[in-house]
Amino acid sequence: MPKHVAQEARERVRDGDTQSFSAFVSQAVREKLERDDLKRLLEEMEAEYGPVSAERLAWADGVIDRLLSRA
Image (cartoon, rainbow, N blue to C red):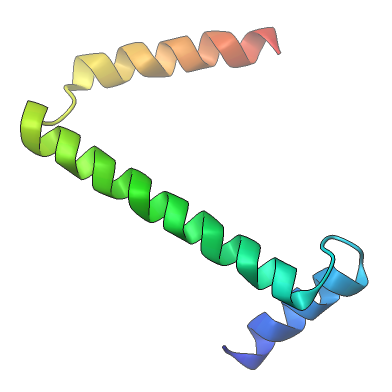
């Protein structure tokens, strides 16, 4: 691990953002595994159904914008 990354993680522990260096690393690895799983699922869906059309992306963006404007 690069020294500057380890140092930043230690600072987060010192600031109370996480319980320990090990907990910080475990959480980071867990999140990376989850992102990899999601990426794999999206790739499988695209292979089976094709890419998402620009129209559907625009629709989804509109839904998200409306939901966020209510928050």
